[in-house]
Length: 315
Image 1 (cartoon, one colour):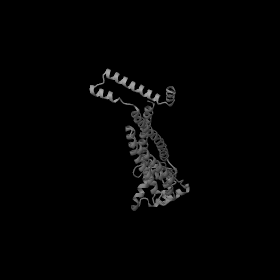
Image 2 (tube, one colour):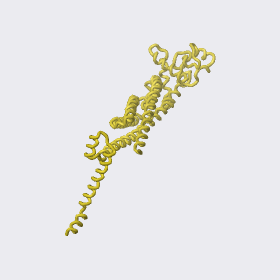
Image 3 (cartoon, rainbow, N blue to C red):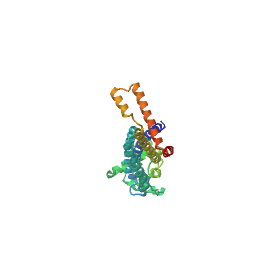
Image 4 (cartoon, one colour):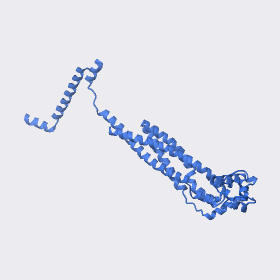
C-alpha cells in the first residue's frame, strides 16, 4: 500500500513538471520572438560598429537557434513523458529520461559557449551618427523605416539630442517620428513653435541600455535557469519512478511463483464438480494439512540427531 502511494505521488509530481515544461517553453518562445524583433532593429542601426558586436554577444544566448529548437523539442518530450507516466510504461519513461538528459547537456553547452560579457562604452554611441546621413534617401528606404520605427517605439529622437538630425543631414527639422503627438508635418510645426512637442531624449542611451540588458532578457535568463532546475528534478523523479515500477513488478512475479497452488487431486475435484463445494474445500484442506504434517515428519526423521537416537535405541 505504501509503495502504491509513493508511485502515485511520483506520477502526480511528473504531471506537474511536464505541465511546467510546456508553459515555460511557450513563454521562452514568445519572449524570444518579442526580443528578436527589437534586436533586428538595433542591429540595423548599429551595423559595422562595436555596438553591433556587443548586441550580438548579449542576446545570442537568448535568441540562438539552438535554444529555440530545444524549447520546441522540450514540448514534444514533455508530451511523451506525460504519456509514459500515465501508462506507467518503462520504455517511454526511459526514453523520456534520456531525452531530458541530452537536452540538458545541449542547453548547458550552448550557455557556456555563447556567454560573453560585452565591452561597450557610452562613447561608442557617437558612431550611430554615421547612419543618419542616409535617412530619407530612395536607396535606403529600409534604413529610414528602421529609424522611424525605433524612435516611435522607444520615444526618442536623434542620437544624443534631436539637433543631431539638423547637424548630420540636410534636413531643416527632425523627422515626424520624433513627435510626441504624431501627424503629418508635426515636426516642422514643433520646430518652429514648441520644441517640447519633440522627444527630448536621444536614441543613443536607449540603444546602450538595450545592449546592457532589458527586463525581457532577465525574464529569459530566469526561465532558462528554471527549466534547467526543473529538468534535473524531473530526471531524478523519473529514475525513482522507473525503479519503483521495475522492482514492484519483479516482486509481483516472485510472489506469484512462491504462492503454492492447489494439489492435483483438489484441482481434479474442482474440475469434475465445476465449482468447489464446501465438502471439497474441507477435504482439500485436510489433504493439504496432512501433506504438510507428513512433510514435517519426514524432515524430522532426516535430522542427523534423530537418526543417532534411533541407532542407539536399536543397539
